Length: 111
Image (cartoon, rainbow, N blue to C red; front, side, top):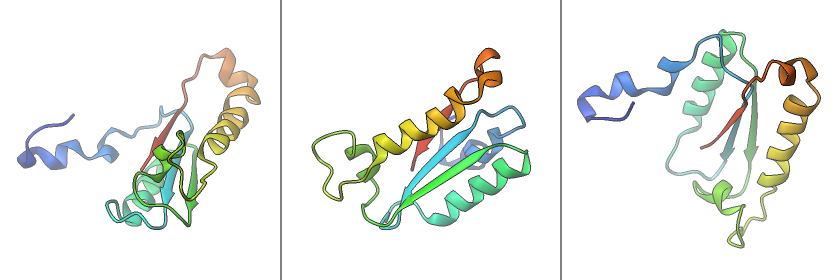
């Protein structure tokens, strides 16, 4: 999937979205200076166009690495990322007995 710059258009994540995705959680911060929010909206639109399930959480505080830092003592904006991911899994994994019985996979992305 990753490679030379000349091959960038073949590496875009939206090329790999089809109608077989598990529910996806997208996490973003309003102070992210590395990834633009249009990327989040574009990914959401592609997932929705395949009738996929997508949930977005945008935290007002925190820069690009803040969602990952929330899993450690280095969580200056005190983001509730672990709790929100837990809620996501409870909503889509534990409540949905049919998906669980079908061994459906789930994923989340920290952007």
